[in-house]
Image 1 (cartoon, rainbow, N blue to C red):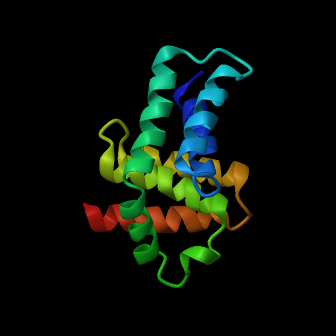
Image 2: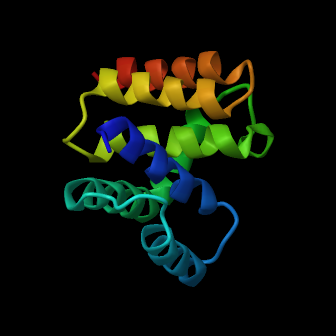
Length: 136
């Protein structure tokens, strides 16, 4: 499993944040690792857990950033998939030192292409590009 696949697995779990209580998320995370189709190497599992836990820890701050940067869109109008992608990428940009900003944006756009709508890649790229340019 490479880093892109690990990030995709982190996305699956971050996506669940919008639908489940904290206790359910912990159970889902355990089941995710126990019932996966393939054994996840320790290093990748640690990366996934760090991404998911970091996103959950900073969720309020991350959602505030999404609200500020999506000026013409209310958070409630943004698809749950795009929200999950943005949450993960914003965590990486603001709170993780493991991933360069350009990689976080590129990986988020790739997730948006695979899971989002036709407009998702451009939307995600625009929001994240704006965030990075203001941050730097």
